[in-house]
Structures are given as C-alpha cells and as structure tokens.
Length: 85
Image 1: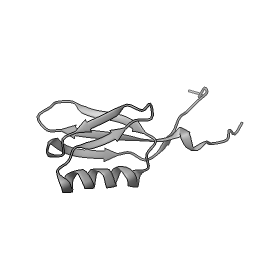
Image 2: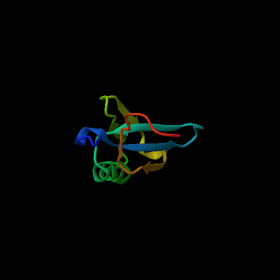
Image 3: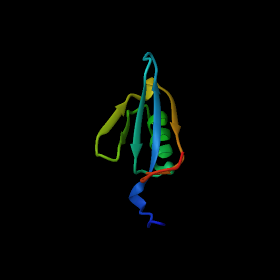
C-alpha cells in the first residue's frame, strides 16, 4: 500500500565534528541541504558561531573556529511498518 509522502517526513542528517572532542554532534533537520551549506559557509567566512536547529526546535551552536567538518546526508524518509526478513 502506497502512502502519501509529506514534506515534513523528509529530513536531513547533519554530523558536525568539533575539534578537541571525541564525539560528533548529530542532528536531524527540516532545513534544506543548501540552507545548511549556506549557514556553514557564512559562519566560516565571518568567524561567527554556526547555529543550526533540529526538527524538534532544539538549537546547536558551534564556534566557527572549532568546526572540524560538517557532513550532510541525503534527505531520508521515515520508514513505518514491517519488513520481511
């Protein structure tokens, strides 16, 4: 059975490496890939903190000088139901 795909189910996963820490920051966002890239480029160019929001409204603030890398995954849809094994 096919379901209607709504735009709010497509989210991108963003991983941010922060220098001098062992863990990465991982968040899911409703923002577009281009909006995230623009935010990262602006933060790096102006040496201002990178501010991103996840789909629940929580914000992540990372100082531009501490960003190791930012990985943006392709938009994914939330899977619902049972799969055959």
